[in-house]
Image (tube, rainbow, N blue to C red; front, side, top):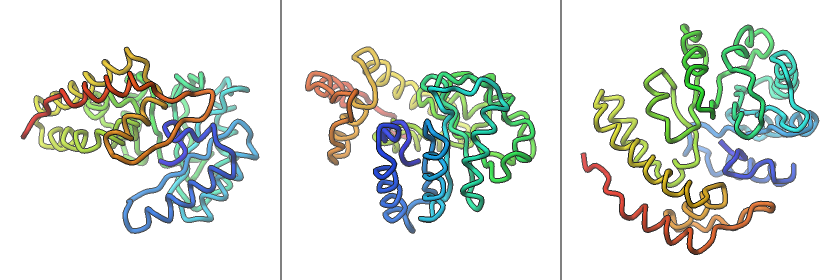
Length: 262
């Protein structure tokens, strides 16, 4: 998922977002199963322009968050906005990116799903970045025919979401703990809940540690840099880059974690 939260999509210009989308689609060809472009914006025309562009460059889907300055206050208002964006890319799947901690839009996804296919024929599913597992559970319960996918976005609670039926995950920690998360997914698939818990608890131990130090997108990029060796560069203002003290402490903590060997 390109130009989302970790990618600072909403801090970029329209042209920058297009440039990144083009490069991800180009580099991902024959390597990645999906390249979903986040095209949400505060203005409807901006979001529509990005949707048209994503479709034109061959993206495998688009995702949209709710506008968060002039906010929709009802399901109908939110659906109207999403419908107008989705209609600009009618040949590719559409995902709603539900992230109320950042948008402040707390319209329950369960409510949003009622009749959504009639409004948005390309609707494919939800990136669900909220801790309200009751809402997620009700969505999955309503999805008896498995029409839709639910990709969970609160990394420290992924195992809980899997237990109630989430189909997968999109999150920032997978940029540097992807292998460990895959091991957790494998353990869960093999019904080894004790091993899956170990991976989830150790991921949580690291996140709990860095959250207390002050952990946001800038700090995430710093961790991605020292784990991968690929320089992520500084964030864009008003975010400021992670301190050397944070980097040293986060690296020491990650290095100290003993992961399961089987």
